[in-house]
Image 1 (cartoon, rainbow, N blue to C red):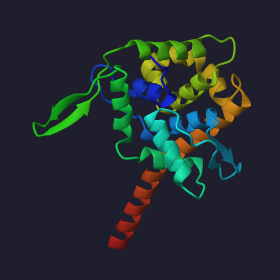
Image 2: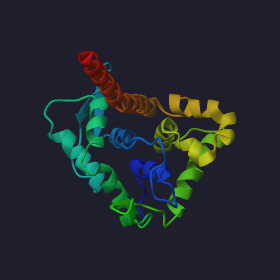
Image 3: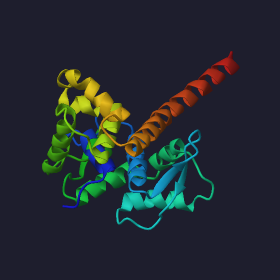
Image 4: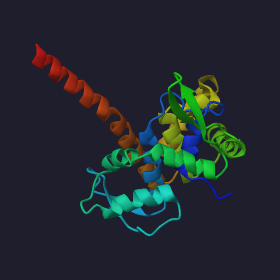
Length: 233
């Protein structure tokens, strides 16, 4: 089986293996952030302007991965450059973005698509795991990076750890108690002590973009509600 992309690995970590639903607290922006991070690591895009973090496409040729290629086309087709944060928001809003990723995992025969009745009227799709080996390998790789305090961590694993930590997925897969003695190690991985400067730059820019992208809708909604209340008063 061809190796999984970071966004696919993150999605697997976010799924409840038996119920096939995303675990509470997982953000779609993280998946989009994983795509942006991978494009940066592969040199398909680069960040210009340290303050605005504007994205420029370097190589728009197809990668062979449907999800990544769709995201890359959107970036390439836009004439005006946008920031990392803007792209995280835009990619997360691609129609059926989550479903496309899950169906890709179905094609890889890692999960299956199951219809499930809700309240006797509505049908929703769940994606229980049918092949646990890929996720077991992901978890083993993360475990080695965190619990083995020697050596550097590869770029892909460092990005995955950073995004998983931001969504609480590390605690879901290892428990908070097990992770507690290794919090400094996790911080070192995320903040660059165990990785190259280039990888650290990718993590910092994408992680910040994911956080802002996730917070902004709530802030806008809160502001709108406050304005509506003030107008009513």
